[in-house]
Every structure is written in structure tokens, then in C-alpha cells.
Length: 476
Image (cartoon, rainbow, N blue to C red):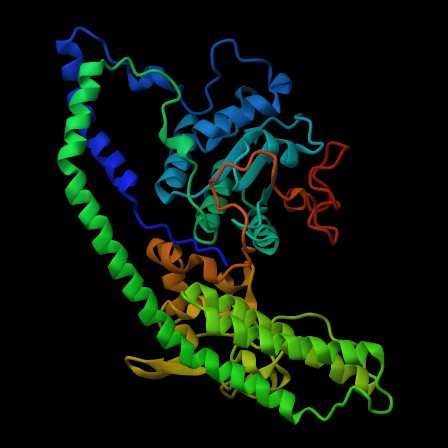
């Protein structure tokens, strides 16, 4: 599993020192007789057309991609009425401050939509999430390393009813930034053109960098050591709970009264049984290799797969209809796949629908407390959602995608997940972000999975994203 946490590197700190030296550069440039460029002259206002901008329907994908490589928000000249420059600037600043690879484009209603997401992603060449407001319609796609397909679908659905572009795009951005992984592309931090600063000014800046370099390097090393120690402590706290889960699943397999050669056993049953055994071995292997709390996601994800395989096997043996794939019981994933959704209100929280097993569903219906998974905390045994941030990856492996933040909103763990510090340390642990490949913000060119930018299936958007007929498809 690819680590998402990026500690502040020495080059990053040196860049900060360069920025600190910027105020002195104009004075040095003036002393040498070289004018410095005005920031206002270097970049046009958000959404304002550049000199000689083409008509709205003639704005090519390459033009949009070039603009998005320079800043996260692009407003087409013909769509300027949808999003005011001040709103676009505020949205861009929010994304840049969060250091996430989120790209937002506002286009006129008549803009061609065939393969728009895929073509824009190819032209931009940057791994990230892409949101497009087209007239009054809205949709988004993302590389799976940054945001899962389920998370994108849920985020888009959650803002479809917003009354205007500014509200819709702001709400989508706020929710996406707390869920997605990766870092902003480096190109957002570059001016894209000559600054006009003299060589003398650059020499002055270099001197400032040299003076602070040794101190910066020492700070980086101390921070890295401290972070590594915090990660080890969190993993050890989590290891106890995960080992309990693995043991519980192993005991389920031991109690299972099934033999592949027994009378009535067929190939489908044997395949279910084999998948359950493989999931058990996979969970043990992943836990043995875990080096960070985020790695636990693979362990609990394997256990969730294994329990669903056992549910399929039980249904086949009993001649029942095969169960649909559902999340595990929210109150304790060891209860197995949920059978329904039930309304639950956490202490001092708001009601929400959570997936429950049959037993916990019956308890809630009778007004009783569900059988909750508790873990050790500094305040004693508490429900896992009232424990520390390390349990985010543990829960994420069971629930995955964009479902978990919604289940946990208003709880201690949910509040921690929404914090920037949590996203930096553990963000990769509670979403279905995929593994390997490029991180968000990395340059990948055309080397990406086009399936991430196609339709979500199931009739969500007509099966093909922006379809060739110029419509977003079902739901818009």
C-alpha cells in the first residue's frame, strides 16, 4: 500500500526560505536597475479570459488543461456568469491551502461532452480528481489512487441538489478535500514565466538559503524521527485489535462444518471456501508485514472479503438466495456482513443510517443497545469510533470508499478524520484508494486507468460519463 503521508522535505523548507526572501528581491532588483514583474501582471484574475481568448465553444481541452496546470480552478470566459471571480479565487485558495490535487472547471452548457473527462485528464497529465460544472449540471471523476469510484459517486450525489455553482463547488470541494489523498502538483507553485528578477537578487536569495540550510536539515531529521515513533506507537496499539479480528475469523473457519469432498458440495461451494481460506492467510501475511497504521486497511479488507465468502457458502449449502454484497455490521465487523440499514444516534450526535447484522437490527428495534466493538483507550474500554485516529485505517478496510466518513460524522473518530492532521497521517487508511501507481499530483501523462474516468455503471450516469450525445446521462 502506498504511503500517503509526505513529511516536509528539505527542498520544501528551502522553498519556504525562498518565499521569505521574496520581499527583499524587488529592492535588490531596483538597486541593479532591473525591474521585477508584478504578480498582478503575471496571472489574470480567476475566470477572466486571456488576451485573444477564443469563443466559449471553441475553447479546446488543451487550453483548459494548461490553465489547470497553473491553478486548480478554471472558469471558461463564456461561463463567467456561473462563478464570480472572487468565488473562484476563494475556491482555488482553499484547494491550494489543502495541498490536494483537485481540479475544478466551470464550462458553458453547450460545451462538447464526449470523452471530456478522459481527454481532460490526458491533456492535463496529472493524477488527481477532476470536477466539472457544465451549465447547471455537475459531475466528477478521479484517479483511484486519489479517490475511489464509490467516494466520487457519493460526493457527486451529495451536492447535486445545491442551488448555485458557488455553493455546489464549495461543498464538493470541502467534502472531497477531507477524503482524497495525494499532494498538489508542483506546477501550482510556479509562476510559469520570467520574473524579471536580476541575477544579483538571485544571488542574495541563494545566500539566505545557504544560511538556513543546515538548520532546516536538522529540523527535517528531528521531525521524521518523531513521526516514525508516533507511527510505531499507533501501529502497536492497533495490532492488538487486528490480532483479535484475525483470531476470531480463524475460529469461524475451525467451526465451519464443511469439507470440499462432502456429498452435495459443488465447484461454487469449494470456490467460496477456498476464497475464505485465502483471505485468512492474506490477513495474517499483511499484518506481519505492516509497518504503518495505514497498512492495516489491507488486513481488515481481507477479513471482510473472507466473511462474505463464508456467507455465500452458507447460502449455497442451505439452498437460499445468495446475499448481496453489503458492508459488515457497523457496530462490530466481526458480526459479518450486514443484512439491513437501521437508524442509530450516537451520544450527543445526530441520527444516521448504519449497516447492521440481524441481531443488532433486532436489538435496535426493541430499544436495546447493540453489541458494540470496544477497544482499550486512555479512558478505559470505549467503542472503536471513540478511540484514537489509528482506528481509521482499521475501520476503512472493513467499510472502504466514501461510506465511512458519513457513518462516523459527529463521533470522535469522524471528527479526527476531518482534521487536516489526520488526513496527512492516516488519510490513506479509510478510503478505497487503490494501491501502487502514481500519487495525487504526480505527473503521469497518458499513463492512467481510463476506467477511472468512465461511467460508474448501474445507470448512475448512463454508463459512460459524459456520453457522446452531449448529456451527462441519468440523474442530471
